[in-house]
Image (cartoon, rainbow, N blue to C red; front, side, top):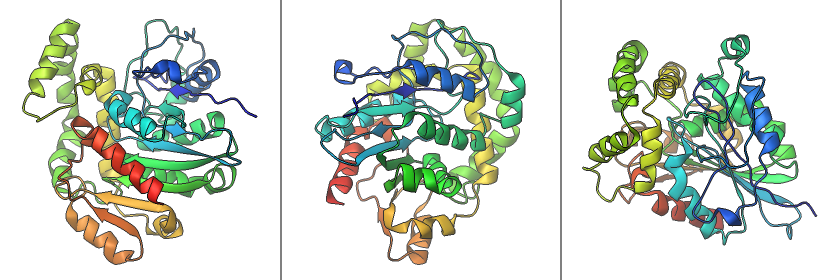
Length: 354
């Protein structure tokens, strides 16, 4: 009988780094860290690091595996939006874990370059690898998630994939690029796509506004972000709280994650990735959707400016037999701000019903 472990890996600003994800009841999450740390660093071109078993939290993919009483153990892999900081998903992750009666350990891994490494790390960057493989671009993020599954997920694990925003595009690309990984070794038994940005991103209402900003003017944001990063931590927390004051019932657990984005390297990597999304996420991959349609659940927002209702109507028309839903609860695209628990409960319901 294989012992259950929970591994949390993060790739940080210009440095791919692994972190232990600390939750409210972290004693209930058995953790193995060392191998995950080393391979994650090597994947992004870092040759040396000193590892610590007591690391703060930050990451973005969840993988839950079932208890040993099952022959083939299912698991859950959640690909996040951009920016990819797992702190935004803390409530979602914790609620999902509790809803599964705490029988499903949670693994997490962030987008490369979206959060800072701890000061205890001693790293040497291999610039040739970083530059050649474009590890912080959209393609690099996809390959990073595949590398994590290959190296750290038990081979007999059946996966339930959950994507949010650009994470849905990443999941479809993972299915297309390595079908054996997701269908034979670790079968992707289901994929839940939350507010999926899988087509025409630059043509969406939000994309029309953000494309010129992120593709041409993003460098103008570096100086103000740098100046803000010089502020004391308490002042940065106050600024974030002030910025979020107009959101009703905002989830306070996202504040540390938001503060962590006040960093030039993290912000630059996030904006660079989004600029690529605007150019590369154009046509919906109908071939991959059709191939895996029976495994897919799409959930579109009724007031989503990144993937508007018209996109929902279009995919429903193209795939009338698919499980494609439209939100009736008024949940925003960035549900982690105030609806993480609600969204997790809904996700769990879909999984149990299936």
